[in-house]
Length: 175
Image 1: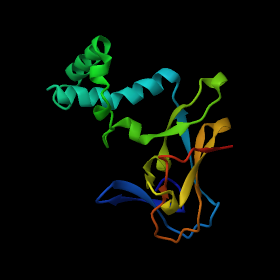
Image 2: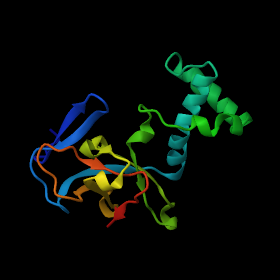
Image 3: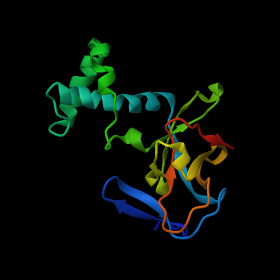
Image 4: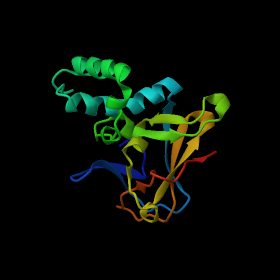
């Protein structure tokens, strides 16, 4: 699957899809490269607002699943009139279905618009994360020149092992 002889996609009961190795992979070895679309400043900010808008609409009795258009209009109208009410801290937690869960931080110079996010296509977007950096066995490497993201082994990985990255506090490596 995905034209890569090193990995396969599996469905994990407790966390959805993820990547496992089909062969042993050595530390510092390229596992895969996936193209990305880098979001511009407005797209990035809008994407970060979506979980709060969804939580607000659901919490105020406008479930998104029942009428997405009405829920979005209601949430946006309230955002304009009372932003603090909509953007409460307890409502900014992303849900598993949110598009923001499939983005990667993307480091850019201020001349290029500053830090943003990128949406990865292909298998990179299916790599699960782990909060403990010591347990991660891969890292992402941003490829600015070609708008791609590399998944690189940080340790030797045995065949049949899930590939895990830690992205909560460790920044991208860029090349």
